[in-house]
Length: 198
Image (cartoon, rainbow, N blue to C red; front, side, top):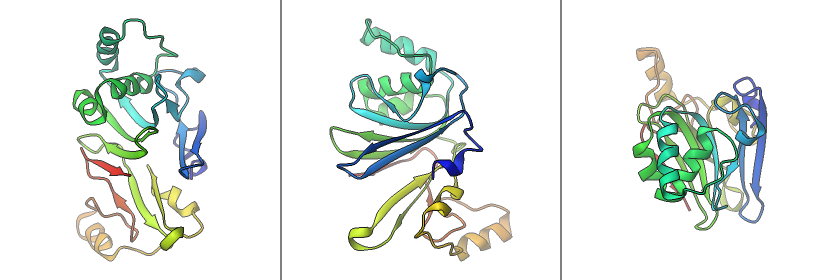
C-alpha cells in the first residue's frame, strides 16, 4: 500500500509494525520542512508512547515548538520537522487538544502504544484526504486506511465494486460527498473529525 503512494512521496518511505497487535503503519515521504533522516516517518514520540504517520503541514509549528519548550525546557529535538513538534504536543496535551491548536492541512494516523488505540484525524477543511474501510470476515477481518484510493487496490481481497450512490453524486454534481467514496465499503473521514479504534 505504501509503494502505491510513491508518486506522492518520492523522497523516502518507511514501515513501522507492532507484530503483537498486528498493526502496521506506512509512510511515503515528500520532504519539505526537514530534508534529513530526522524527519523520517512513521515517527515515534520522545516518550515512546506514540507512533505517527502524518501527511500534510502544520503552518504554526514554530509557535507550537515554543509552547513545548515552555513545558519541557530541556527537550532535545531530533530535527526540524513539524511532525516531531506535533508528536511532542500530542504527548503533552493529547490528540484532540493538540489539533485545536494546529493551523494547517493534514491527515494522520496515530497509534497509542500504551492504550492500544489507533486514531485517524483530518484537518478542519478536509484539504488532505483520508480513506478507510473493513475487509474480510470473522477472524480474517482487517481495517485498512490510506490517503489515496490506489493503495486499497494493492490489497488482494479488495473488491472494486462501484458505490452507486457515489457514482450518482459524481454524475450529478462532479463530486462525491464524504463519507462516500467511489468504491463500496471504503469511506472518507469527514473533515475536522477523528476516528478511534481500540
